[in-house]
Each structure stands twice: as C-alpha cells, then as structure tokens.
Amino acid sequence: MSKPIKEKTASQKISTAGGFIAGGLAACGAVTFTNPIELVKTRMQLQGELSHGDPHAKVYKNPIQALLKIYSNEGLRGTQRGLVCAYIYQIGLNGCRLGLYEPSRNVLNSIVYPKEDPHSVQKVPINVAAGALSGIAGAIIGSPLFLIKTRMQSFSNKIAIGEQTHYKNFIDGFSKILQKEGFKGLFRGVDAAIIRTGMGSSVQLPIYNYVKHFLQRHELVSDGTGLHLISSTFAGLGVGVVMNPGDVVLTRMYNQKGDLYKGPIDCFVKTIKYEGVFALYKGFGAQLLRIAPHTILTLTFMEQTMKLMQAIETRFL
Image (tube, rainbow, N blue to C red; front, top):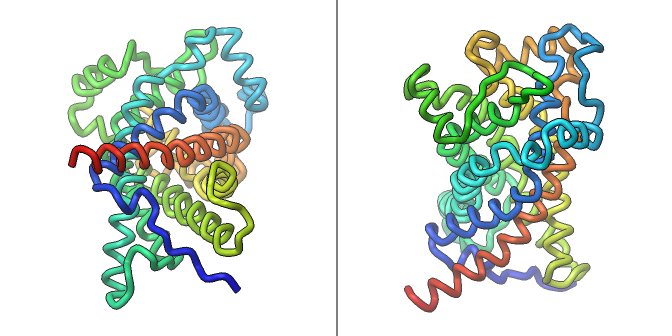
C-alpha cells in the first residue's frame, strides 16, 4: 500500500494576502466565461415568483433556450449584464473563500489536533468548518456587490421577470441604494447570503481536496491538469446540489424591494407554499451549467495563480 502524499500545496506556502489575491484573480478569470449562464440562472429562479404555479409565468424553459432568448432580445451585451460588478464581487468572495480556507483549516487543526502537523491533517469535519467560515466571510464582504449584480441581471426592457430595478452600472447601483435605503440597504439579504455561501463553501474545497488526495494517494491520476479538472468537477456537482435552495432564496431576497419577504426563512416558506418544494430547485440546470465550469475554471486557475503568487513572494518578499 502506498503512503499518503503529504506534500504542501502552493496555498500553504504563500501568505494570506497572497492567497486572497490568487483566489480573486482565479475567480475573475472564471466568471468571464460563466457570467451569461449566471444571468440565465438568476432569471429562471425569479420567473413565476409567488405565482401559484401559473404556467404563463414560465418564459424561460431551459438554460439553452433562455440564453438564446436573452441574446436575441438584448444582444451580446445583454448576456454580460453585471460583469464588472461580478468581477469585484468575485475578488471579495473568492479572495476570502480561497485565501482564508487554508489558514482557517490550520487554526482549527491546531486547536483540535495540537500534536499533529496542521498542514497535513485532513479531517472532513474540520475541512467543512473551514470552508464554511471562509465562505461566510466572503459572503459578508461581497454582499453589496452581489445585491447590485442580481438586480442588474434581473432587469430587462424586453421581458420583465421579478421586480425590476434599473442601474446603469454598479456605481449607479451603490448611489441609488444609499439614497433610497441607506447604508443598511446595501446589506439587504446578507443573512441569506451567509446561509447560501456557507452551504456552498462548506462542501466545495473539502470535496475538491478529498477527491484530489484520494486520486493521488491511490495513484489513479498523476499531478497535473487532469487531476485538477476531475477534482473540480466533483466539487462543482456537490456545490450545485447543496447550494441551489439557498441560491433561490438569496436571489429573491436581493431582487425584492423589501415588500415580498421578511427574511430568508419567510422566503423559503413562501416559495414552497405558493410554488411547491421543487421551486427551490428552479434554475438547477443553469446552476449546474454555471457552477461546474465555474468551479473547474476557478480551481484550475487557482493552481496557477497560487504558483504565480508564490514565485512573486519568493522573489520580492
């Protein structure tokens, strides 16, 4: 039987700041390709909102049809609504989620397993907790940007889905929210963001690392792009299944003007009451089409950005 591989990853060899930057850059690269399907997911999650199952409310029938419909009505620019806002959001969210994951895991390992090397200990409960903590930190920091992005992506002057709020850009969004709702308005739905992101983050990196170490330990796949892609695919599928209900609630909490839901629990209950339990998986097809490639691209890019940051820090710091 081969011995477990205990090599340190690049993320364990660079500073927290370096991990933050590397994670943010990797996520921005990924979101460039996945933003159109994110827009589709947002609109599919909002269509038929509290409609008692009205069949006429289903404008978008599946992710491909929805993307083509948006493109035909709004053009290429319309499919990339909120992209700049998404970049800034990804830097905050994934910078924390990916940059703080290893430090959080090491701290928790040091507390729970003080006699072992915190870098080499791989325990699922600790990994889940570290993923959730780092994800929640990112959700709080990135919440205002996600709110503005959601409203920008839901808006359409061709087909109105959900409550409509028009922002020219993310700066205009910040300005209008501050004027109408105050600073507190920027964090509307942050509780839903914490729940949703905590759910997703608690499984993303633990699944990725577990699959990666499993494949390496049993010498099934050698280190390289193939290993990262396989591990990322499993992580993306896990995130999609676990996170979709929280994602539906989050989208609706952000898009509303404060008149539909009192909070995430109220949104969760009303969604089931008026649309049925399967409404929590609205946009699931788009979710998988988005989260799997996004996770694959983010974590694959991260392997490279981590190495880049490691090289920079080694040379200059």
